[in-house]
Length: 265
Image (cartoon, rainbow, N blue to C red; front, side, top):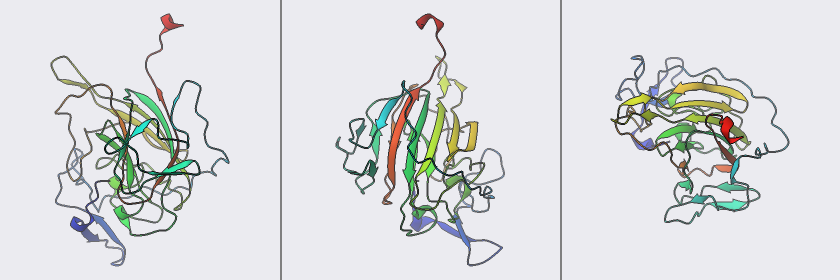
């Protein structure tokens, strides 16, 4: 996400001069003190082959809100209000008309969505199938074609953008449908604006666990460290990006989560 390919510093790996990994070494250091934001030298996670996909899309539970069932954009708004993405054959596809976001705001949630990067491979690194799930407009889980496509580890598919690479690279080949199952817990501040809980996320990609209740350092800006300097509401929109790559989406549903209330039974 937030790709600025013309400004990328291209680093050549020591293994082979023809195998270049894009990234930066002039960005801030991560809180762990070991790697820069988008560091090209940060080790990439091991590759795993996900299990065979199911023949049918994952059906939404009875208490879920269906955000996209392949028939309309009724739950979404685009630039200027109208969504101008392509809609056909049960999926939507980006069309260089800007990002879209949900009409409704959510707090802590369980999210399911399915995506496919372009079957025709063009470009490399951040230029292949670039998109993202942007929570509250602040916390991004990257979407990218990371099948035999090296880039900086904190910008590959499944990464907490600019912060933490996934535990594994479970990417499927270009053009194949892939799944994200995401559980998000938002940050909390006290009445005086002091942070008392960071945002947490769990991400499962194609059935493979990538992050388990992992802390966000803060928001996920491009080439910078995130922070929690500005408290925000406990609810927010979900966004899908648009970066000129014809990424497809289908079967999106969400379940708000909270404490079990016996009194409500």
